[in-house]
Length: 431
Image 1 (cartoon, rainbow, N blue to C red):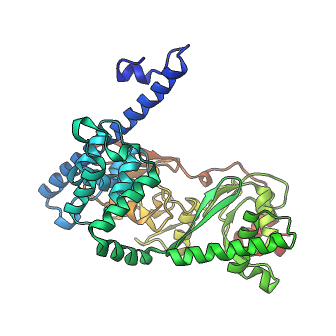
Image 2: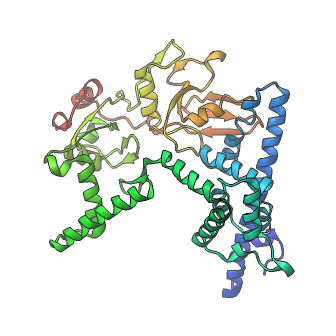
Image 3: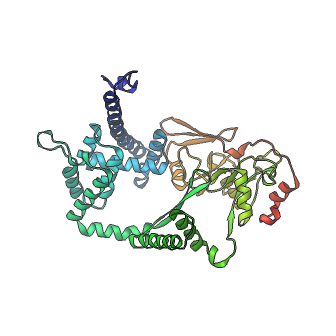
């Protein structure tokens, strides 16, 4: 068996028994939990150090701590939003939930288990939160295991909810009512040119929608429909939202598909870029253009396959240039690890420091990353190849590679590509 962490991380020796291999897996899981606890400690201390440095530099109180979550995100190779959640969780664990933190430090509790408890107690007072922390995560008399250790994730969530309702039902009810403000619909890429369409809805609405789709599937099955239940539910959802089945016409949609003319004309299979999704096979893009009434807003390409450069003398990027940058960056924030949609067109090198409003010195960022970049001590510069180099206040350097559209294999210039560069068109023109 392993004797030290280094020995454990070296992996099991050849010929290890099944029992030893299970022990190795369990040991590594404990190390992961402990490491996440120590990361939480380090994040809290980093936050304290940055706040102290910013306060000494005269930063207003409301802006103290700016940029810390982004530094945590870059160090842990996650999105800035995730970094902010991890920093918030770390503060809660160390400042308000000592027993939960102790379980993590001992390798008995994962970061996600701790997240569940922090989330389900967020609406409670500090005293009530500590009651639940004590009830579920404190080591029992004589060293008995904490209740939470043996619970599954759903059991843990339900146990925390029950205790929260018992301690302060009014706060739980108020939180539920307030949560309706967060209802939304989201879209994210899935493999094989599919997408995940999700909706966060109040219980009554979500259950009603699912029940209606389920009923449609049952009706179709009774009529001998060969589609699976899931297929009928998915098709019914699309039909009812777009009105496709009731109008008898193809839905008119607007998308940005960046592809060479040769790929469009079926003489080349260079991947297309679909804004909001990513790379897609050229054959799929051609089929999509023929399947619905779609028009391509603009295709910014030159004979070398590169997006055409644009620039402006103003500080704010004009609409055309802003759209160009968003398309070039695939509609996704350029910060390492961030998958949020572009919300701001930002100067890599600050305009106040002489940075130009040009393609080379502009990047698409989400709101969080754009704000973090303005914190004391952050610097950035564009690379000659289209990359972006970000330097944090601690001197750590992170490089974001150039977008795929910065340099592409040269396509054959054709009349079709000339048309795509200059007009809006639908699938009839493309044909």
